[in-house]
Structures are given as C-alpha cells and as structure tokens.
Image 1: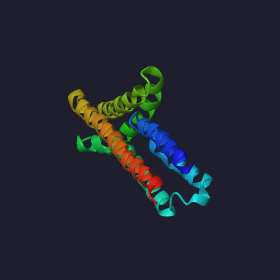
Image 2 (image 1 turned 45 degrees about the vertical axis):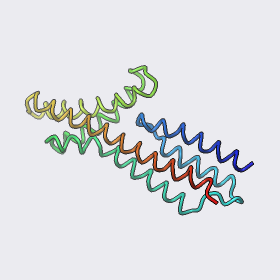
Image 3 (image 1 turned 90 degrees about the horizontal axis):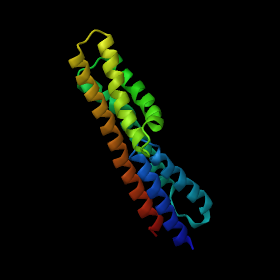
Image 4 (image 1 turned 180 degrees about the horizontal axis):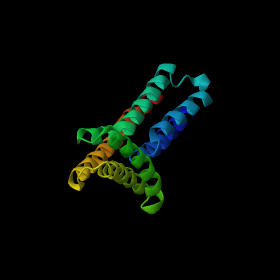
Length: 171
C-alpha cells in the first residue's frame, strides 16, 4: 500500500510543479506535501531528514532566483538601484493584478509579473528624468530578468521533484 501512496505523492507533486511555471509557489507545495507525507508515514522511514532539508534549501534558492530576477535584469540593463527596487514592486503588483486582469489560467500571473517588473522600472526611471527610450530598455531588462528568475525557479522545482520522486521509491 505504501507504493500506492508514494505514486499519489509523485502525481500530486507533479501538479504542484506545474504551478511553479507560472510564478506560483509550486516548489513550496512540493516541500509541504513531502513533509506531510513523511510525518504521516513516519514509521516507514520514507524520507531522511537530509532529503527534507535539501529540498527545503533548494526551494529557498528558487525563491531567491525569482525574487531577485527582475532586480538583476533591471540592473544589467543599466537601471538605477531605485529603478531595480521599482521593478521588484512592479513584479509583485503585476503578478497580483495579472492574476485577475488577464483571464488566462495561471498565465496571467506570469505575464503580470513580467510586465509589472518592466513597468515599475520604466516608470521610475522615466520619472527620474531618463529618456523614454532608455527607460524602455530598463523595462525590457527588468521584464526579461523576471522571466528568467521564474524560469530558474521552475528548473530548481524540477530538481526538487526529481529528488522526491527518486527518494520515495529508493530502498
């Protein structure tokens, strides 16, 4: 019966992994599901504490990639520190607004975060007196950085999923 529950855990974690592609907390849902499964099947010793720590640390690293993606992209394109912080605020605001204003399931969150990061950097840099063309370059950098941050987080999510999927069946 443990194998049936293990397969179910892998399937649930596959769904959580898919959420990560859209900037949602899929990696953390994988970690939480795995920890709850470990607690529930404690006597079976399915996962070691080292496996749980490893996937939690990877989830933190994934969040840092996503969190600093827009900032890094804005900075690489020449935006000021304030423009980079505006990209972060724009990404957070855009993700929330995109979820509701772009009615494409989950894609609205991703698009909103990328567009919001770009708008945040662009508006602040333009308000600080930079030309629109230069501000637009910072917007592209911030939006692309945010997208790459989300992509890196998803790639780390794949690693987390693989670790859990292998470890659950490893003797």
